[in-house]
Image 1 (cartoon, rainbow, N blue to C red):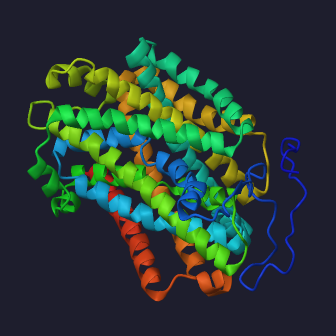
Image 2 (cartoon, rainbow, N blue to C red):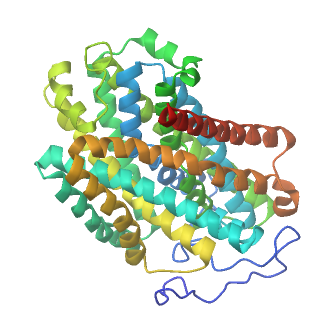
Image 3 (cartoon, rainbow, N blue to C red):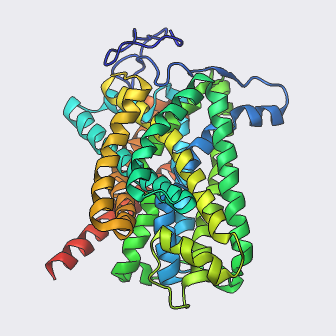
Length: 461
């Protein structure tokens, strides 16, 4: 069955595992999402380092969403306007991501359900549909960031008009299809290579920017002005939305099931441990890249009369003359293109998982990708034609705020399910982890509520 493709809109035959669904679940598991890759990668190696390598991969696919073009817009704006102040937001967001992604991988490994399937099983049909619609909005917002970021990179590197670059991004469907047919390991390898490219580019940019180490260290200490200053808060929420991405929680809970671990308590415990290590290492790399973007922007633009630089195109034009190093701008654009391509790959998987999990509808991957990409292309083309680069830059930041506003609707079910002993058995979150996870959920919800209040207050003023 894994090698067959059902007709568009039809589900493959249901996979019903042996035994009852369990006291915490209403029904037995349906066919797994990404059925063609389900449990295809063996992990039963004798040496620990080969186990580490076998489990490595899903974390990097997840980490891609934490360094997509949407992060660039918020990090650039934050660094240029406020110096190193918002580094603390990048750090705290990343720590939240480590916790939440760890819970997502545990849910998938222990229950055999991804987060979307778990929501469909637990909530009423109207509630599930509402959650699905919200997640689709988040994916469309993320895809919008990828479209704009890739188009800007093509414009900077090859001089293509922004509108044409946006349209060309629809062709990345073919890249995704080719990689999917070559196996999940090949997809992971391409993603890791692109992540390494982005990391190397920004390591180079950081070296030549000569940032203030004292300023960097001070920036990692939270400042009360982040909450009291509406401008800082807006960018901070954008960073949060760009860092902890709602659809990544659905993605991670599914792709960890590509590993063929033993479905025994001991096997699941080992899988949870190695999956957590994989995602933590990958997200640490994402933290470096996000921090590096903000640090380069702070060191290059803040305090130099260029605090208003929030557009990727402006940063590209100014990097080489301000830093005095030939090629600085080109390296920046190459990293942006690699980031956009990477996000394309994982966005396709996330969209497929969400639709299959919530609705039990399986579309052909190219149909699903074109649908999502079309939703993102239309507003991007309209804004690029009417407002040009300035409009698309603002649309990038807005897309990240939309992501953040959708985040609670993924976080709350995840925290609820992983803390439920009826659903998780002995793997349910202990009391201290429940408290920490719910605290993160409350912080995210509170920041979003404050952002809405500040936004409406600004409109009414």
